[in-house]
Image (tube, rainbow, N blue to C red; front, side, top):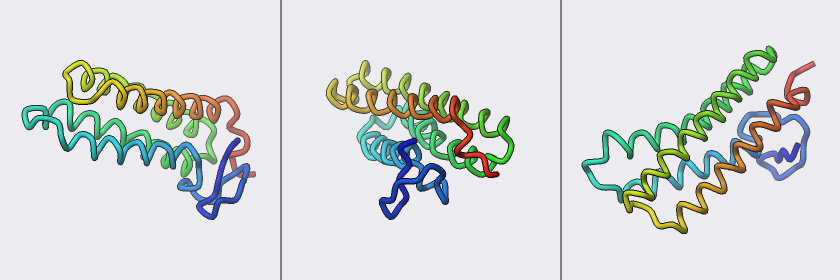
Length: 135
């Protein structure tokens, strides 16, 4: 499934949620968005800035919750679906940031492509959850 431990080892089922490649990628993206959004205008603080930060971080937190609740396939599926929804919401906020001129087209394309990849990874987990469910 493309999982890599924090020590760089390949694994089918990660020892902790932080070892999941999708979590690692989503976390880096959330941090990138935090840094980029520091330059957004002050009038956007309680709308665009907070929303894009919240949704990008929620991808990570829902992924962590999915991992913790993985003993129940329904809970795993629900949280992975929530993480995917938050990734999609982040894409919408990035659309606004680009169209308002707060981020460059290059930055937008880079972040969008990475969030699409996160979505594909989450979809893969949802379709093939067996390696994540403890025996």
